[in-house]
Length: 82
Picture 1 (tube, helix red, strand yellow):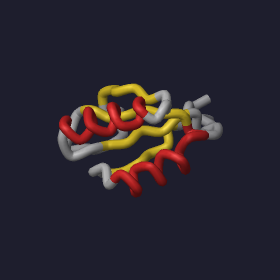
Picture 2 (cartoon, one colour):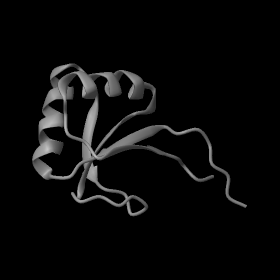
Picture 3 (spheres, rainbow, N blue to C red):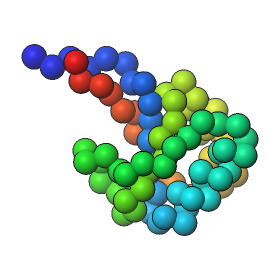
């Protein structure tokens, strides 16, 4: 049987590559550790690029997204299957 543990990271999906690149630049400028990755297979997105970040930063990043009015589709936690 598969078990899910707590998420280690999250991904943000976007509607366009432009928005992903803009968000990456903005977050890195604020000192967040983020990385552009291909959208995981389990997630549907209009854009093929997602931004991965540490799960512990999700609330701070959500506040930044809202304050900076960054255009995102959604935020998903990523679980490791044991």
